[in-house]
Image (cartoon, rainbow, N blue to C red):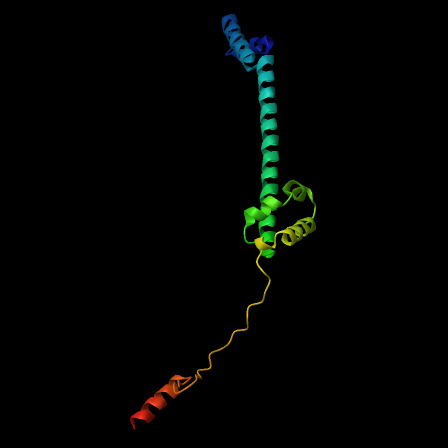
Length: 162
């Protein structure tokens, strides 16, 4: 705000008194000084912003690392389960985990599991097929004759009573 602007204002026919113009200009000066950002405050704010940016970057890196570890852990667990592993911790202890984490594909993990399976077959379930299911036909040896259906049992019951 300029002093000439205030002196050109009129209240009625008369210009503003000099004391009023001086008071308004003094208040305006205090407002301007209060609104000025001091260099120290600006540096402090700038440093705070940098600190938060660094914290954000570190948090992002930690999150990405945890996510990679979680994905690898899940991949390892499912691969051991698919291979028929009996004890995940024991099998994991025999694997070179850092090398497998660095591998781009899962073929390295499959090969490592196959090697462990050859070295320590007792850590894995045998891949045998279960015996075929034999259905009970109701026939038995000797005098014990059991009917296969409810209708057959009822028929036999009523025939014996006759």
